[in-house]
Length: 219
Image (cartoon, rainbow, N blue to C red; front, side, top):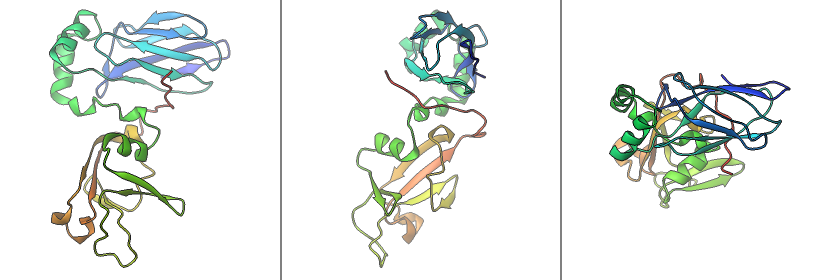
């Protein structure tokens, strides 16, 4: 957990994949200029100023920046950059053991994504699938995969949303960090006429909602 007291003491935990602790990650507070590294359990603690930004850096991992505000509680998820060279670098830098990395990539590789860095589900889908459009109709966002309207008297060409095998009418309530895997099908006709406008397939993580992620800053 991460907490920010008035004196600026910040503590937290860094992990990768589903819940693999990441050690020896460099953590720097931009304003206070304080620096520390995570321990073997991925934990860290350092002094920072109010409304500071923490920079997390490690060999074989994507650099991450988090804005710290009073009262937030969070864990820090880092994206492992896949590949044999990055694996050796991460192990050699003491971030992961060979055993923990092998176990994580064998069992939780699908969790190694950057979905939590997107502000909402629609931005995530637009970013991951360039051909998909997001339209705002009367204050409601809709995902458009195909331009042709099938089986619709009102010209509605909104895609079908399938979440964990169930049809959802509204996916705006889903937070990006709750998503384990996402894909789009341009031709969802095999799923019936409701899928003829395309299908958004979403699988959520096993225990979503138990890890809280704040907004992310890239600068």
